[in-house]
Image 1 (cartoon, rainbow, N blue to C red):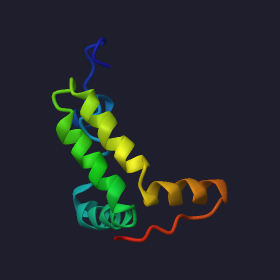
Image 2: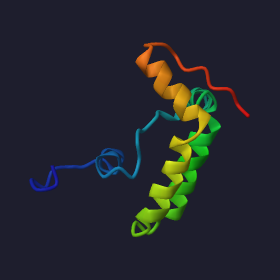
Image 3: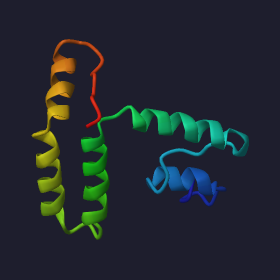
Length: 98
């Protein structure tokens, strides 16, 4: 669309360039946020915390060593072992929040 001079919606452009993951209608924001929060809360805390640390540590995107170290530590956790076991056994993981 940009090359043709056609109209480009800011929301679409932001998603295309991965500035946003998705766009939610104004009336659905609260329910969507609660749903996403529930999904995040069900994930293993070690992995979520590692992902957040890696994102913060790797900006600007030149500090890949910090990202590698963070994920190596998370991969060595009991949560990682449970996730792998659940995948191999074709079942939902049972993460225990410590």
